[in-house]
Length: 326
Figure 1 (cartoon, rainbow, N blue to C red):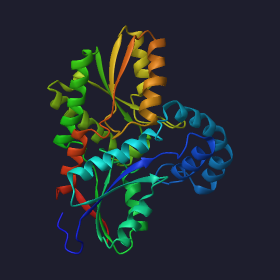
Figure 2: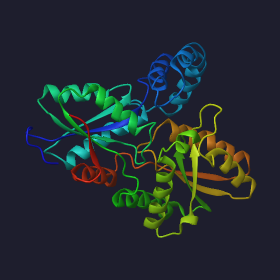
Figure 3: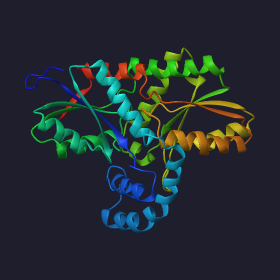
Figure 4: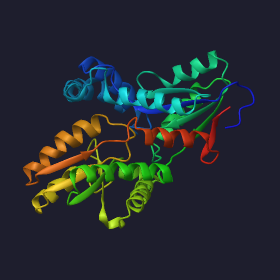
């Protein structure tokens, strides 16, 4: 990154966000912000806002808070803890940079991170959303926030890194390390977060990028593409989402006599509710009930050295970055 106005370049790693506590009140505040983003729920505001505030949040928040309580760490939410550690690990590799982390929803906010750098006189900033695959529901929402909140700063954003060689090799190495320690399961399943099918029908590249990521990971593993399965999790609402769905796929594998499945979630940079509770608890229980014996979850890259190396390298590249605000 060529920086002419500042003494140090700056990088902000942005993740989705998390409640500040495993309580219904904190979950309500977080989900209210998250689900109010028109990129996330594309319904008319007049219809959605009352439904969200008066029906969905009162019903869902206590349930979700209980789920968070099951995975909460002594230091806080896993997503928050691992994202902060990852930013520290990246900073150790970029000592001449200002490296911050922020959340699209919740704290620390992207607006506060940009304001902090502005107060320090930093005008040129790179924002790296921790979403390997681009989607209008995630990366584009970060770009929206940058456009609204950058004041007199030139901000560049990295759209995706879904086939980055270093990233694919890091994911493959984590799978190989698991296989070395525990043996290889009968199936390898890659579970990505889902999005509504209609978004892909209207041009969102997310599904194609998930498939390209699966191919890149298979190549890095030295196996054929059909040596792994690709599914989508975390469906919300009644609309059709990207398929095949993770949960019914695991149930079918159990019914088919498959006893051992290795699961990795390459769309998540760090472990969070969707991996630690949805996959290792909900989905595992369903797999066992259908006849499976071992659902073996392979953790996200989190704050590993390999992950920090990948992100530090991406931060210094020229390709893939686009000016989002001036």
